Length: 343
Ligand code: ZN
Image (tube, rainbow, N blue to C red; front, side, top):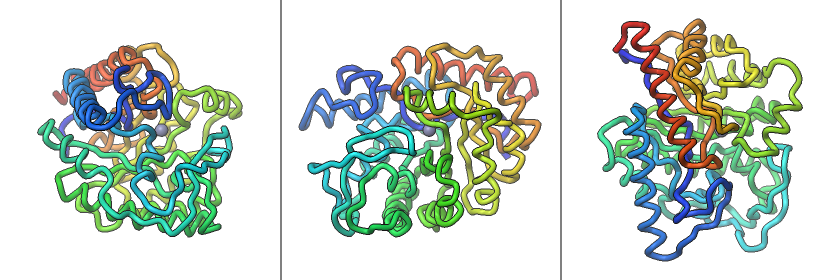
């Protein structure tokens, strides 16, 4: 049993301006070739350093080597055309020009293994590595080959599993699959979403996690969230299935959301990465605001299962805002640990 409430980030952190244009998703790289390779490694070191200095317990790479959490993984696969893109509606919310599946998808080599090894070498603390989830991958592409979201998701799940097993083998403590699509396509989640997620996490020798949120703090997501009436009960569709799955951890959006916190009571026995940092504003939470969200979570989950986390990735935020939010997250967990006599 762990002795204190630990902290982690959901996934991404902002990139330095010398690496990619700030405050933008899919921001193009500012360099190319060897200088880009070095700059990505340097940025990862800074992202790790920021988390360590803030006092975060479970460390991530801040996704500094990826232009986007989904498409960068797909760039490493065969069967996808990145040149002749097509427009699709993502998460039923906004249009984006995305790559097209034109053939059977395969993974000829590891995609993030070298990055993961670099992360492992940067800290002795537990580390988490994020991968896109199968359904969210399907929802970020145009499919001109499988002609079935389920079949394509299954193909991705098998590929993700190969990658995840390699990550676990080099000492990654948690492999997390990002599935924001789980909050939108409830029928598909029920039919095949959780099954493909479990396939992706099959036989992992480390812990597995799934991150389900209401999206980055970009305009399309903020508008969508404002359009949701009353309480946000989307998680209610997926939690019972996750509760009976072999996934170990669930990362959620809680701070400033209208998610009824008692829903986490449906996830008995799972670790809950409680989103205590809002990624859709530039206001820095006070440690007390962070502690309050975690305190509420403790009413419905056992203390050894509660982690403080961010609501979602912070890539679209200004760097200094994200750094301050990291410090607030760690300070909030600290405050509660002291209050509970756990430090
Ligand atoms: Zn998210």
